[in-house]
Amino acid sequence: MWGGRFGSGPDPIMEDINVSIDFDRHLYRQDIAASKAHAAMLAKQGIITAQDAKRIAHGLDTILSEIESGKFAFKRALEDIHMNVESRLAELIGDPAGRLHTARSRNDQVATDFRLWVRDSIDAIDAGLAAYQRALAEKALEHAGTVMPGFTHLQPAQPVTFGHHLLAYVEMAARDRGRFADARERLNESPLGSGALAGTSFRIDRAMTAKALGFKRPMANSLDGVADRDFVLETLSACAITAVHLSRFAEEIVIWSSPLTGLIKLSDKFTTGSSMMPQKRNPDAAELIRAKSGRILGALTGLMTVIKGLPLAYQKDLQEDKEGTIDAIGALTMSLKAMTGMVADMEPDVARMEAAAGEGYSTATDLADFLVRALKLPFREAHHVTGRIVARAAEAGVPLDKLPLPLMQEIEPKITKAVFGVLTVGNSVKSRSAFGGTAPNNVRREANRWLKRLKKKA
Image (cartoon, rainbow, N blue to C red):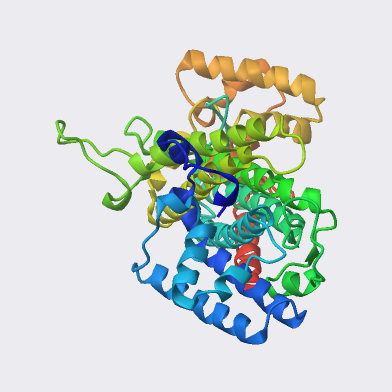
């Protein structure tokens, strides 16, 4: 496509380093859609004939069918998806194919195609996150009253409910969806018509192609139109944060499913065995989700590094925006599906969770709160008294609710037997009824609110 200036072909290694069809073939739908919109606009503006535009559209539809049926032969010698499509179009319809590239460059063509592809990917990710939220909310509603240990520093801290813990990830996913929605809003402008960098002298209608492709408006600056990759960086940033959230949950699943804790059970669907140890059940799905976050973070870091030193406008470096992004979005999409399946499939060991929830004197804060409410002690004094009672229980080798009242009264004489009403893990979680707390009624209300909201949005 640029042979007129050159007397010989590229060196084989130049062809290898320059070619992008191995990964930008993923953009075929978007490339064909943008070309059809461009041809229709050229015809409306009288730049090409209506007959040529019709033949171009028919030829592009044929190519789309060939690609989707697996009959299209991609050629590395043609470098990228744009020239593969244009070359095949010339084979199908002849000279009119050569008029399609009027008033555009591969620079604005690829920028448009990739915006469309990223926009479609965001929509798919949003649907995946919504499905993940539904699975979490449904499981949370089912286990609104299931008590489990809450941790800080990976040490037992206070009892919480399993449902409350799961709803924390619903909230994280909601923020993830918000970040993707923000990225989508900002990327939804059309670079088509920016040309190579300076726009075009043809009397084109950029608003027409923008509207045809679902963009809100054309981009206002042709240099920015071909050189901008903020939309990729912002989307990858949202991908990276989402992947980190999934990785945190995956780490918990790995810990919870170990026989050493035994808090949940994963089925055969999301575990694997060992080729040597017959007894093993490995949480490989969770481990792979945890690992894939590294690939996604790497894609973001890699593209930032590529872009940081690029002057305006287009540079060939920008070809490196696609491979990592396509891989990262694929990894995130797969991770979301696997995590959604695991959430729906996992079963908590309710008895083990409740027993673990009481370990480590996890109701000590409830005792301190009791001393404040019942005995009117300042909290700092109540905290000190509680610490001494915990130490006494540790010496006796018993949990707080089994420490005899006289031993407590040796430390604080005004304590009454009413204290035992706050020392069980069940009563502890029920008492956490302030907004955002772990009380079962709170969890049921929030889970139902989320399920209703997700159903409405769907």
